Length: 273
Image 1 (cartoon, helix red, strand yellow):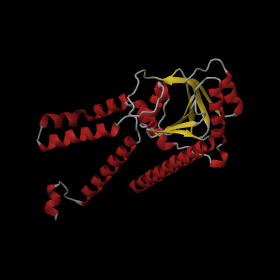
Image 2: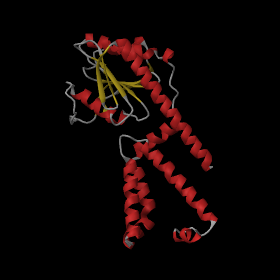
Image 3: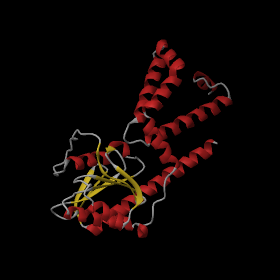
């Protein structure tokens, strides 16, 4: 047995400890990168590891020397380029806000009423409830507010002359209005394999729900019902009360998944330490 272990470079029991330590660190780092769904950061890490293993297998000494001497610089450049994504992953892993219970989620009902009021005033507003993956960097011209959702606040915004048609109202999962009157930063219309007629803003919303854990809803002008967008799928013509129930269940599911992820992270960190 020791002959096989010596072939792998394991000569003493301390080698087991070192291998276990670095394995745990790499695993934790991969889990951290995997939290970002807007950029496939984990794929870059896999690609770099694959290049290193190929260089080691084929004895490409120039590449191995490059890895040995410049990996701190490469890691630093990686962090600088993906600074926003990594910062969001760190905040999401450290601060997961507890979601309110269904009985306390009156703000969803208020947003539904505001959506229908906006439709009556010829303003089709897109409501986005963002999760752990933040969307502020992909939305422009947003009037920042960061205020609890109340009937007075929504009425003031809907009746205001500054709010435009097909604009974005950004919320979080705890009933905080982060901003309104926003538009998607990208002007390129995404290609959606769906026969449902959608506006440019709604197509962008559908695309970003497939990349993040955000949920989008808006009132349909003709049917006077709610359309939901989540996980890259669209569900149309939902009654108001049923749409509230679906949103409540979706947010509770997201919170449960976040709690399980946090519990697993704490378990790994506890065993490492």
